[in-house]
Amino acid sequence: MNRITVLLAEDHTIVREGFRAMLEHEPDLEVVGEARDGREAVALAKQLRPDLVLMDIAMPLLNGLEATRQVLKALPATKVVILSAHSDDAYVKNATMSGAVGFLLKQTSAQDVCRAIREVQSGKKFFSPAVSGRMDRLNPKLRDRKGKLTQKLVALTSREIEVLQLIAEGKANKQTAAELGIGIKTVEKHREHLMEKLDIHDTAGLTRYAISAGIIESSVQLTII
Image 1 (cartoon, helix red, strand yellow):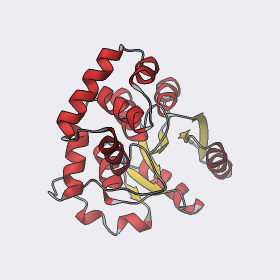
Image 2 (cartoon, helix red, strand yellow):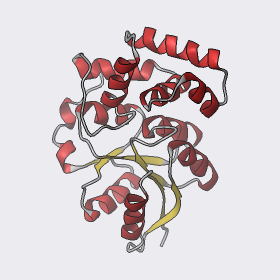
Image 3 (cartoon, helix red, strand yellow):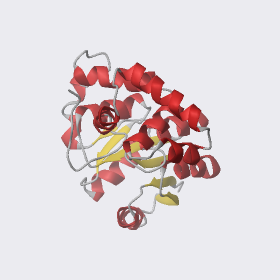
């Protein structure tokens, strides 16, 4: 029997261990690696070439959306299923625009997680029951607020998304530069481009945008005014 190889990308150890324990009970599923942040997820995916990545949407250093783009660019045959604590329309749309073929809420049952992996690997898409009923109206071409949110996110480069995440996490320009291995002036230029592209002109606004787009998570869900 050919096993479906799975890479777990989740920054919370207890959650990651829970998923591993759950999948290890399935004879046709095999966890081949675990990543604690988005960058590690991309690196391990390139090294291990798993059939599927279970990708947390909000992780340090590199969020799950951008990690998904980078994994699929390097490994087009690999499938990505996004994990999230939130089912907001913007989160789901941004996940699908990033190339994910599944979206699971973290409170999804073990049965549905295993079913999702099998269905996605067979070429289908899978969304948690709380999300699947809304999929018909989650069209990237919608011109409501959240549709614009998705379009703006897609317009950002990979580096701009990395900078946006670090800004939203409260990192100063010097810290961001050190984290990404670039100069402070380059960080400042990326910040300027972000503000221009998003039409947002303060750090608080960029942070609200990052939360709304699913780049980082917050216990208090904010919206862009």
